[in-house]
Amino acid sequence: MKIKSFTDLHGWQEGHKLVLDVYKLTKGFPSEEQFGLTNQMRRSAVSITSNIAEGFSRKSKKEKTQFLYISLGSITELQNQLVIARDIGYLTKNDFKKIAENTVVVDKLINGLIKSSKILAT
Image (cartoon, rainbow, N blue to C red; front, side, top):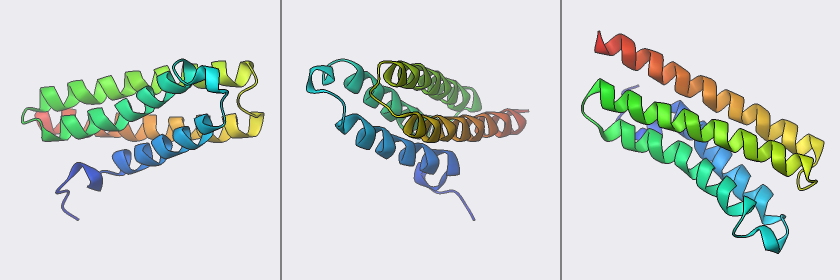
């Protein structure tokens, strides 16, 4: 299958599911977190797929890879925020485990995109 759009990338598709999960989970956070942890987690999650999309539109392999690395940084940021949310009691252990595992999957997919981008660049 030819990849015509960033939405065809498996890494973006799994990242998008992660974004939706983050929005669902943070809906249950206390209202005083609306401009705190809730906002930060949502922004980090959206940044993952936004940077995949932006990188897709770039012409050079170097630029594409740069945006994929930014996406990885956003995953790590989200993972940190998930630990905080779990530790202060906003996430159950089960919810945390499920979404944390999803971040690892997305991380691996993006690392795969980076590797394939480097191969194509040589």
